[in-house]
Length: 398
Image (cartoon, rainbow, N blue to C red; front, side):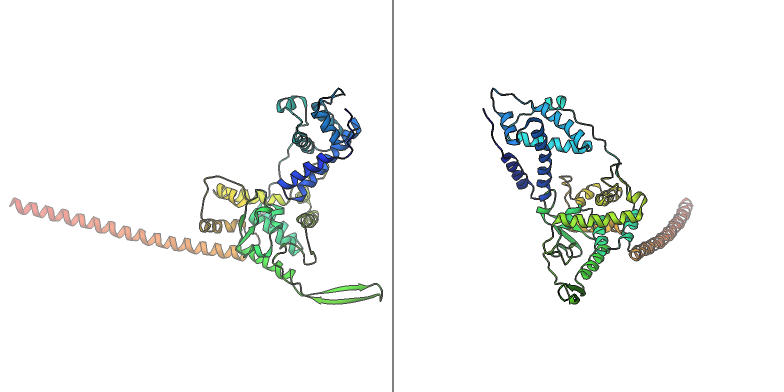
């Protein structure tokens, strides 16, 4: 049976299915990029397209057969020699290829795969642990009000980086922020609670974003610079962390811009803030996700582990059910631990707490004195009663 297919229609169909299951364009792009690596390997090793490979692996013919387990093992060797990527990347590449093959009825036994296809062991390094002073240092080093507002948003809500970027102005009432289900990892609507400090910072960013400004334009024909005063119009449907000059921003574009700005801040700070996870210098130890881990740890350390799962947007315990009012009251209790730069608010809360403790101490002293008075009265009453009983017996005996 001659296999003369030249296109890769199976790849197109596979990527379309990925796009339907996950509308995020980045996911489909990543899968397509991984399969492109596999396509080059198959073409180099067997001189056939991926469509032809699927037919070879799923049909019975008199021609030479390709063993799928040997194919995957050879692909791992190819990746290690040609690309020199990390074990985790190899695992992702092989997993994508396996999903692609199984989608088109290529049988891969999990047991045989385990013993025949050996992948490099993934070595996971410890994630950098952030402290509250570390986050304060990062926030103070953010020269851009946009980046500072975004990092503070992550450090308060524990939100995923891209989920935070999907929030629009109409989704915020400065007490809570709403994330649409189509933009979350779990595909479920979420409501985030905001601290007073974060609400004030977001107001500053929104006012700054829509401020009146002067823009200079250069006219190449007349070779003159023209200035124009503009005031951006407020659009409630635009992403809150986008710039006014971005007409149709994408979440990926917003993320990359903020990531570059964040890495510049890390370079200025240096030391542990700019450290990388490995010698390849492909990923830093401190990332946007580090804020999420800090929020999780801070709330859990206070004894609210289930509530921390709710704040982070995990599915959490099926038994954790609280009303919106109860969650708001609980969040206000932990708000001081998620306040970073508003020292006046923290000092005011500390002063209020000190006053409460002094009042409670005075009340305790008053209660103690009252108890002592009652005890003396009771003791005096018992003495008088004993005297009365004694006189009564003496009288009866006479």
